[in-house]
Amino acid sequence: MDKDILYIEKAKLIESIVDIKDVDVIKKVRAFIKKAVPRPAVMTVEELKAEVQEATGQLESGKGTSHEDFVKEMKSWL
Image (cartoon, rainbow, N blue to C red; front, side):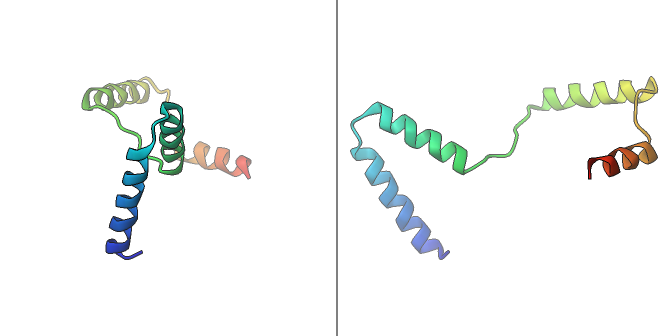
C-alpha cells in the first residue's frame, strides 16, 4: 500500500475516533485493534537476564535437552 494512502486512511480513522462519544465503543475499537495488530513480546533487560541465568543454571545442572532428543520430540508432533 502506498505510504500516502496509508497516512490518509490513518488520519481518517483518527478523525472518526475523535468524534466518538461513547466510551464503550472506544474500548471495543481499541480491543479490536489490539487483536488485529499483534505486537512483539516485550521483555525488560532484567527479565531477559533472569531468563538467561535460569537457562544457564538448568544447562549446568544437566537439565537440558540434547539436540537428538529434541529432534525426536519434534518428529512426534507430526
